[in-house]
Image (tube, rainbow, N blue to C red; front, side, top):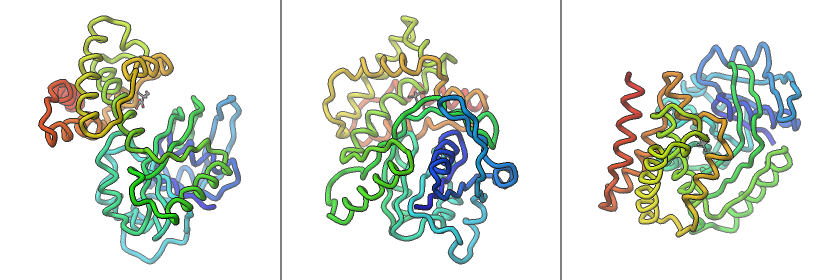
Length: 316
Ligand code: KPL
């Protein structure tokens, strides 16, 4: 199967590299012309999880090629992986996606947070848009290199299992087999809403607090004051997400601490964005929880406070 990977950050390049290593035909769609040129001319440098380095030839095009009007693009993928961050789901990108994703071809949306799936579905009414979560770890030291820092898995599926026809279910299974065949540890979930809520809860606590306190994930719970902030943000977010439909899981606080321990040496994506002066995903993470709270008439003061602080950090 042919794959288009839209977004050439760490996760996008990691999937592009793994698919190419498995012999699949891949096109990477980049935000800038410069990155597409660099990938085309010099190839993609991939350091795998064992530390071995691979130079891979890589087809790449900037998104502007697709967002401008024109006939159908020459590359016809069987699956599209959308690996851009939330702030980059712009009108230009949505216009580009209408040409990148042929009718009937599934798109896996790998974003943190919530609110993007509705926009993607509106933009691509003739394709299946699946929520997807990855636990792979990757670093992109420069625009044409990626390092696989942690082996993880890709979970995907419809937002809710309601009204899933036999055809939809068969198409999902075919996509699952294709991804596994391409060497991706993929899992099909019929409960993505719950999976997305669980991930949202972790990101809503770890990401803003690590960005505000400028600490690595493992350092966050070590200090009593920060741990109290974590607990308060966790409790408020759990109350809102449960009211919004998250299942009544036990041990959510312990799971959060486990994630901090398992990713102790990592800087969260939000801390990295703040340090690099890039736009963060705060509006789709804590902002998404605040929007649920508003609809449900629930308090969301902790989420509002961290959103304001991260926005202030970004503006400074
Ligand atoms: O997903 C993450 C992120 O940084 O966005 C966590 C789980 C917090 C790991 O760093």
